[in-house]
Image 1 (cartoon, rainbow, N blue to C red):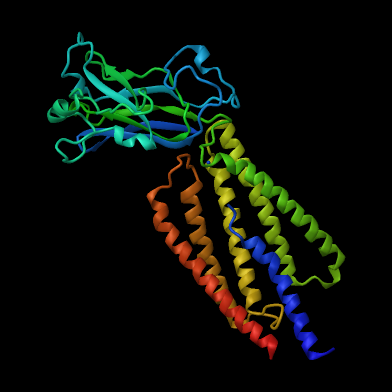
Image 2 (cartoon, rainbow, N blue to C red; image 1 turned 90 degrees about the vertical axis):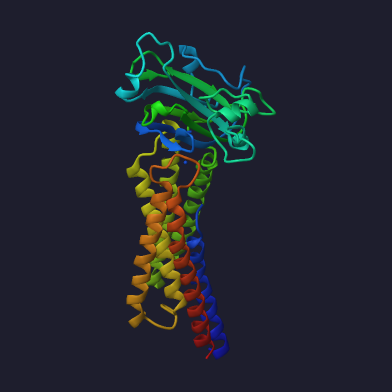
Length: 402
């Protein structure tokens, strides 16, 4: 065979061996039930508040009589999963104050403490709170703001939205007499406009410091409990599962056809493809379960992110190994094996921690602050691997040209 043709064949074999690995290494791209178990309102500025949730919600497909409705009737709660209705539902919400705060009042008082539930769309966030003479912004109405804004002292400042006078939604819950608890009752707030919605429990009464909240809220989109950001992903993972099945079928045919010439490296490629399909299937079942039940079991999601972390780690190490010439110009990695294994373990741990923080048990549509810190080592390791891969690939190609 001509030496030039031999080099050309080596390069072509090298390219087609790397192609499935690069495809498998491409990054593949959760309303929900929010439970409050003795959650305490924290002091923020001149208010005490608790963030009850933040999710993207698609507006109801059917025409609702009013964007804001509260009802405890049975008919208000009869809704199927795919009825096209979007809402935030309050269930068994109970507020508990301290005995000392309750003893400040007599049993004959009609209202002895006010808690307010606020729901607003992200674009209307400036409609909650105000500032006097351009000073620090306050959530609760102060004497100066009562004169300027016309708000009621001891309550939150609510500015009527320009497009809808019923928003932001504010629901008042009062303590009676000297009781230490009060119940909100089952209520439904219908969502007719698509947007990012936020829920807060707020008290402007200093007597209610340390207020505790129990209960839960259900956030529903037109087709289930998946938050708006995550809803399209369920269909995406169906498509990806079918794509991996097709890739597996084509790969299996070639595997059987050339089984006598199959190399050790190609067994690992098979494992990566199988892990990819398994990951896509697990993601679909995780989202389908979340959509139907409104909760994300920690065990299922942990399995999903672990399989994904293993797939990404193995596929990157395979690309790195082939770029170093493994199976092409060298039968083993020799002294580089320990370094490759070390970077693989480090990358797996960084990816696993990042994905657990971002996905496991998470139902809000906003990522937590911890992700900002964990994404940095993961991005650094990805960058380091890419540089190592291309540096090794360049050296291997030079050896093939000699």
